[in-house]
Amino acid sequence: MDVLTAARDQFWTTGFAGTSMDAIASATGLGKGSLYGAFGGKRELFHRVFDDHCSAAICSVSRQLGGDDEQAFERLAAYLLAHATACAEPSHRGCLLAKGTAELAGHDEVVAARSLEALEGIQRAIAADLEACQRNGDIDPAADAQQLAGLLLTVHRGLEALGKAGAEESTLRGIAETALAGLPRSSR
Amino acid sequence: MDVLTAARDQFWTTGFAGTSMDAIASATGLGKGSLYGAFGGKRELFHRVFDDHCSAAICSVSRQLGGDDEQAFERLAAYLLAHATACAEPSHRGCLLAKGTAELAGHDEVVAARSLEALEGIQRAIAADLEACQRNGDIDPAADAQQLAGLLLTVHRGLEALGKAGAEESTLRGIAETALAGLPRSSR
DNA sequence: GGTCATCTGGACGGTGCGGTCAAGAACGCC
DNA sequence: GGCGTTCTTGACCGCACCGTCCAGATGACC
Image 1 (cartoon, rainbow over the protein chains, first blue to last red):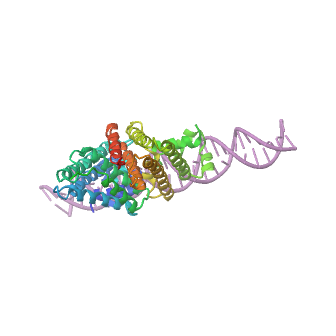
Image 2 (cartoon, rainbow over the protein chains, first blue to last red):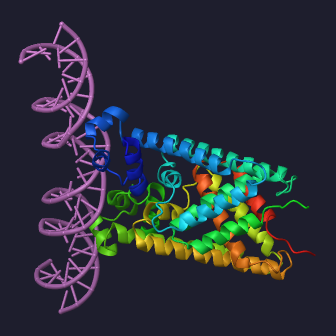
Image 3 (cartoon, helix red, strand yellow):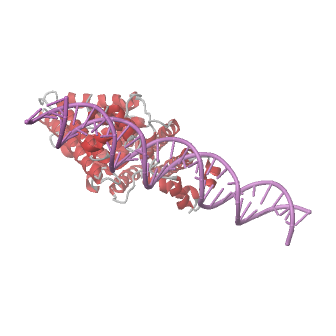
């Protein structure tokens, strides 16, 4: 495991404030002096980890939702339902994007900006999928894909919050299905 | 300002880990020994504050959504739109329920349980409003009010998360309106 | 006013943390 | 092998924090 992955895992588990540099040194196998030498400080290391994680999240959703028009709705449904299931896992540490934002966005502008950027990236991927659904006739072509993408992103983030509080898988999947059912279907 | 309110405000602003007992002592005007004598410890104080806040949140949503059937939909729309606006406020510290859950639910079972309980209470109030909408003919009576309430609660929580990342008011209000527009209307 | 019981505040002890730095290790060159 | 340069480590420092505790303050009673 490389240094950044080990550090990310620590921050992911115990949060920024709850993770000591000693813990990161242990997890990475590096001395603290080397960590400071390489990254500058705890905050800078977190930014690096957070940035990489946001980039990976955008790539992941783009990969999951990208594809032909015919299966676009199936991919979208699978994405939301899988996310609902993941959020309900007891071992689920919650999303680093959500945790980092909740913990730090209020007083760390770098995290706030990166977080917003990541959410916008995820929304674009959802909107692209919705447009594919529209071209394929699964969603009403007159509907505003950007607005619907914003709603689905909000549901996605809300599922994260409810899962964090311990909601059950069936509850969360029901919510995802209700959201999908409420999308304007094409009248054909 | 009383002790619990002052303590809540500190925790609300700087989170659990980021709030020192010295800061709470200053804000409340009490000595630390008195705080420990009255509440037992930092964690116990936070539990008390969190519990009171969750109770108040449930009361608030019940008050906002409670009323006659005729205006039920208007009240629901006003509730979501006002929330969207509130989430976008730069001065908005985020919801203590969301912040506390994100920070602590993963390793504090009391907070996790109280958080889930609070969310369930909010969902009940939303469901009751939706049922009033159904009786009034604003929502399809064949729709599952509990499922729709779960979805709206998820949107509500998701708006919180997006607002925390700095999303704009018009974006969040657009999302709230899209969610309302997607509710199954009565065919009359 | 004096005495006793209770309460209060903040100094203090012990621990943890982020960051620094010098001793030692590792590496490259002659 | 010796020398010089660079890198690494983790002990250490200064500071922050939680919880404890006792000297002093307060209040009730006679």
